[in-house]
Length: 158
Image (cartoon, rainbow, N blue to C red):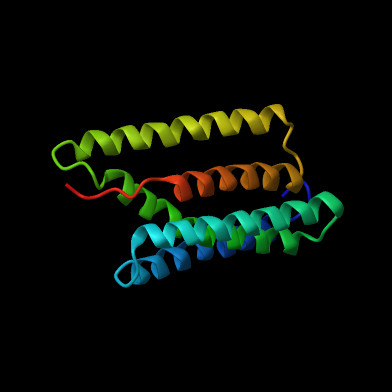
């Protein structure tokens, strides 16, 4: 809002557009998970989100004054793709647990919260006031997610 000098109504509209990305991605993932292996969905999506975030990051690196529509399109795409990773990666991490699934789920949630706190602190240290900072952090994290998912061993349900 402050970087581009947007008014409250425009910012609210952008927020709604990005929320639609989350909802559409979640709905489409729910449809696909019945037809395609959930880990395949997560792996393909992690590659797509890495490519998308790196393209947007590079665009802002070379053209820092890009119109906010480009940032909105990048965020929409990233938020859309995140919904193919989060639920499927969670399902994969809980697959080997039967009796202790609740404890495993709590541990996974605590790890996500901890990583979120570290990322928020990193953005604060980097003085994240530009789209470049935001998309750089997203690109690095998406690359790490992609690496973890592609290297993850195939887990069999107990």
